[in-house]
Image (cartoon, rainbow, N blue to C red; front, side, top):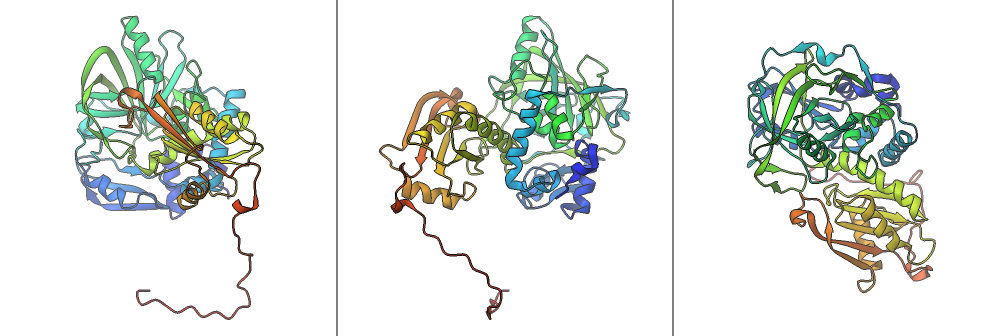
Length: 465
């Protein structure tokens, strides 16, 4: 597999990625006009999880197409990066490790595609911002990458947040508790200052992964944008902001220069979140969009709150947990964040047992490595951690309910999970491994492999084939 990376900088350019997907037969083109309110997301959902992304060429009320689906298939992502889908967590982990050991800083260039056009006035209603679910509070930006700077140190920080459109130049933002952006906003408030930032829409997966990297792997005070450089194979290119010292992504489709003024809030929500539930309405920070920059022919990007988030965030979580567990627990082979666990809340750990008790060590280490987790299941290395039926088989036949279930009460979790009101709840770990040392009664029954070559086999057609 070669992937788009063989073309060098193309992985940083969403426009080049869309053209590459089209050539590979991995792009669905919707040529009929669709309504950005509800219809666009409903049509996209018909292709969710499949091998192709979707480009909506005509969106009512806007001149710009809308793209979605880049992250909803690991097979598609594997093809894009030129590697097997099952090896993506190892690739992500290696890129983050290389950044930690020898970071490659972004570079600020004089010009980039995102500066081809600067709108004379700010009017968010001209952008094809979709409203996804039936009860969503309004149109949402949900795939933009935020760049800001620590008001004290000047170190850049990047993240992905959701933004509800509440006016032609205003957005309301949800910031999870403990996020670095919240810390930056608090520092700005302490200084009596507004917090400038840029919102960059339509970027490559390297930057998306950098923005979604867990804080445990990219602590406060480190410039996470360098992670994108590792995925790109070259320094990430930025352009200087026109209103503040905060830069924009040179290859982005759109870049919005914004500011948050501490204490200004607006009701935000509901929003259909990754959990499959609606996030509720609450007063949340209000921001003002000061300027809109774009390419001459930009494409707006949105993400469905489902498999795209499961994969994009899950890959980062898997990479972080795998890297830390392999340092701390002998025998850890692989980690998978299940889709049934929303890509956030359930990790399945594959362990080649070396001695008794290490499965529980793996449980505790996984919870520490990724705080949003609510469940961790540890299985032996003869179990396919990406096959829910195989994991359930291990739980049904190897889990001892008396000794194999670990409950942790009153612990910090993810606020979007309704099981963690005010970010506090309980977590559970399952040791679904064989007793150690192994005994023959836990050996799996196996059929001998054979070939069908040379056998005379007749396979009749079914009536509906």
